[in-house]
Image (tube, rainbow, N blue to C red; front, side, top):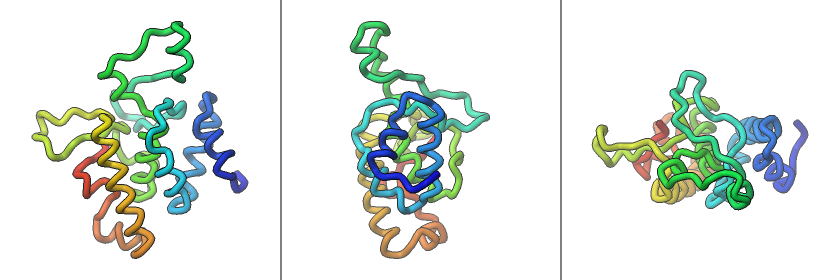
Length: 171
């Protein structure tokens, strides 16, 4: 794929066509550290990602969602709050891709759902809660800054992933 402008990339990444969205995911991953600022800028983008980020062996605990205009039309009922926390949005996918670049593989977790490592294992529910996303992006911003200073390989050698300071992990 040729070099894309941010506008072209955003159009693909937020496309309702699965193939286009998947192309953007692949492009962002291959661009590696060059993608970080674009991905960080997606914080707050609650539109669903139309590509699949699930591990092929996962139990697929994510919830398939549709663009907000479909819910607004009344064709489908709104998702419950619990289901909304299991939707992979552009925001979630962006944070996940930053982690994927660190791990050097697109599929490194079973599901793109966050777990709070501060909670006991039996209480830690995998979900993309707003609190987790805020903490995750705060951690990722600090991590990207450090990555610029010391380099990605150094952070990998130090076992310092983008969500470490937030004490979050992908499920």
